[in-house]
Image 1: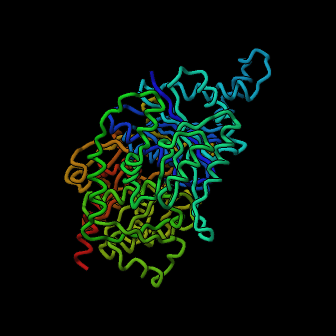
Image 2 (image 1 turned 180 degrees about the vertical axis):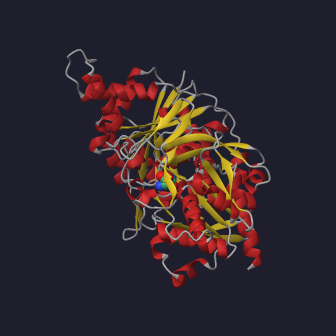
Image 3 (image 1 turned 90 degrees about the vertical axis):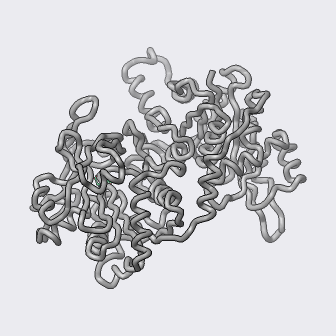
Amino acid sequence: MTQYIFITGGVASSLGKGLTSAALGALLQARGYTVRLRKLDPYLNVDPGTMNPFQHGEVFVTDDGTETDLDLGHYERFTDVPSTVDDNITTGQIYKRIIDKERKGKYLGGTVQIIPHVTDEIKEFILSDNGGVDFCLCEIGGTVGDIEGLPFIEAIRQLGNDLPTNKTSFVHLTLLPYIAAAGEVKTKPTQHSVKELRSIGIQPDILVCRCDRNISPSDRKKISIFCSVPEESVIQAIDVDTIYAAPKDLKDNGFDAAVLRSLGVKKIPKVNLSKWNKVVKRIRNYDGKVEIAVVGKYVELNDAYKSLFEALSHGGISNNVKVEIKRIDSETLKDKKSLTKLNSVNGILVPGGFGQRGSEGKILSAKYARENNIPYFGICFGMQMAVIEAARNLLGMKNANSTEFGKTDKPIVGLLTEWIKDTGIERRNENSDYGGTMRLGSYPAELKKGSRIRRIYGKSEIVERHRHRYEVNLSYKDDLEKVGLKFVGMSPDGLLPEIIEIQDHPWFIGVQFHPELKSRPFNPHPLFSSFIDAAIIHARMI
Ligand code: GLN
């Protein structure tokens, strides 16, 4: 029977609960177990799909087309287990389900309450469809004590009681701040956080303490006594130079062994971390570097392009170089002078994006890359902007634009109104809902013979994850191909452009999908490996 590990956080947000969960998943796999990771988000939105990247960071899209929290990206990168619709839930979804049931009279006239109805719905989510894995890791978003998180904490408390002994373990992540004025590490916030958790009825089995120095034996003892957690289950988690060193670091500090002990495992299986050691060794011994400009709207925010930045670093891992990212706010690119920011970089990447703001700067970046033979990688919006650029400057269509920005007589990019899904034909129009109605998730594409993209993938058909509402308009295909912008990847029905490339250029590729979502540190995505390889060649030439 599956055993459940619940991960909560206290004291402060951004302590790395998602990464810790992902690293624990990787460690359990390294000991031969199967795992699955789930995220329970207490906010009221139905999913993060319509949330502002400034507030919520990247939206991670799964194969089955669910728009999820970015922590699922960490889970996939660390465990390589593809997430599904069953792996992320929000308070919004829970309430939506309950209200739908109530309207249908499913509660037979009973009063619908947080306990038991909301907590039952949460428990059902946690226990359903876990695929018979050895361990299901459930991370609760937010920090203990948040009003909106209470039903989730209550639900996992109940599960601790509902399930047989040794089937649940509670991990709590806290902060041990060093107070410079006192010259001391303080354990009080941790004590308070655990007190808060216990007031709801949960006694943590493991404490993961984020700190910037070793925990002294006396502090460990203090934490153990006040929090009733065995000393060997007070785990120190100091910042590591690369996130991919986290599994080994946590293992060395006894984390997964403590979790397994709390679940009644007597003989802890051997751990094989060779895959992780290889990745970390490469990262610590890079031979050179390249600089890539990422031109976007939310560049100052790490979380808004999480998977993208990771995938770029994976491209560096496969080529043995450090990838330095030059973050450029597309709104600052307006004229010749501002474009000088791009003249020292070895590659330009325009990532996914929405809306008109900043789009002209992205179009100018594509032009700059094309004219100056700098490797260009356009992802989703970045592909659409590259096609608009080619139409404007190679075909002389001054008004070329996207209908995403308003009416235009040259709709080079237009609204996607119909496409084929495995469940049938999907249709949309201008009045469709905003949430969850894009072309989402995995779709196949066929790659043209003789194209660069086919060489990069080494195959003729690929499957990649999508998240878009607009598409490149096929009416302009022939004209664009005549001036060198080739449509080299199409949906199997030939109706939807998936990939464009300029063959008379060192590396100029645009893709309608998001390859960054499928890149793994130990299995870098071929497009990112190839892009960084092109950037290395560029670096050698300048
Ligand atoms: N806004 C564009 C569209 O909806 C691109 C989306 C994206 O980059 N993810 O098609």
